[in-house]
Amino acid sequence: MLSIEVWRAPTPIPRPVLTVAGLYDTYFHLIVIVREDDVTGWGMSGMATLAHLDAAVDGAVGLVGEHRDLAYLLGVERAGHDTATRGATNAIALAAWDFAARRLGVACADMWGRHAGVERLPCYGSGFFLDANEDQLRDEARAYRDAGYKFVKMRTGMSVDVDLARFDVVREVFPDPGTVAVDSVNNWQPADALAFADRMSAPLLWMEDATPYSQLGALKGINVPIAAGESLETVPDLEDLRERGGMQLALLDVQRLGGPILWLKAASALAARGARIGAHVYTPQSVQLLACVDDPLPVEVFDWSDPLFVVPPHPDRDGQLAVQGPGFGVDLNLSFLREHGQLVLEV
Image 1 (cartoon, rainbow, N blue to C red):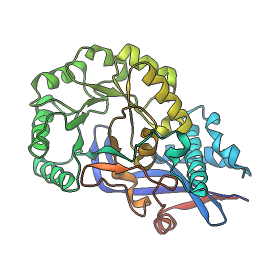
Image 2: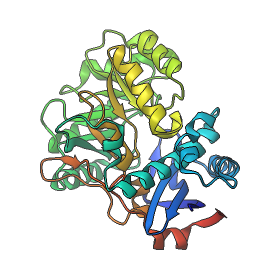
Image 3: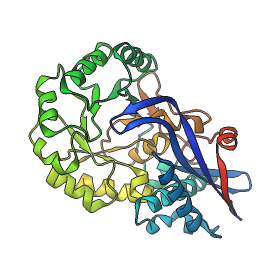
Image 4: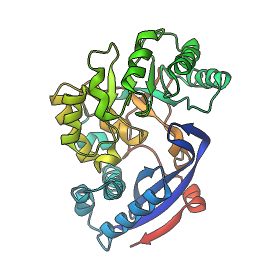
């Protein structure tokens, strides 16, 4: 019979960072573990605040209850109707899929329809936060390059002049056109985004969450690929952003959508409307999901969850991530979890 654990795990970020939303030094994880005999699967959701974590943990405890049926856990995504519950259903469903795939000895992508021949996918290093000065940006860029990355994403959202200067620093190390993405976390006004696009020294990989979504349509016709969608939780909202806002690249968040099957449903719907599909954070899960869509965007490698992994995902020398199993191909660092986490439920 299955055993299930629900953990709350506030996780120190490898280096505290400044964003337009404030300073972050902790990423708040909900962890779900599913076990039977010698097979263990696990899933996670990550929240920016302790209040969001507490709500998601309460949701997971309520959904798990005494349920120890794998079919129920795999289908729990249907129960997600708000942000906290979606975080709960995502962690539960990811754990169940990881367990099921490990029991079969395959990668999760193989259970969802991995495209033939997809063994690796390009990835990008996601960092360059606003607290870094120019020397630190340069050092960070070199570290990404030395680690094998061919693409990177930097944070913007300061003044256009400052953002352009910081972009040029990163370009010293990644000079090729289309190798650097920028993410203003919805903080630019349309005029800022347009000014950046007019004055930038090289084409972008993409411009992400350039403005509040209600204003994104003002950027239609801009000479930059527009990426967005990570904070949206329903297919209709994503479809509206594609049609009304002109989103070309759909960055889908498995937690916000409530789990991997809902993610795949959203990817299918957006691809049918002509959007190219990418994913948001959750690197071990995202590489498996993106292996199941046509012409995916590079996978985001984001290190805020790295302490939870025995071996964090990292690219090979060609800048690619392996799509490998069993399950999601990454083992949970149980020593770290026991030291920093709190077991909330065990059934």
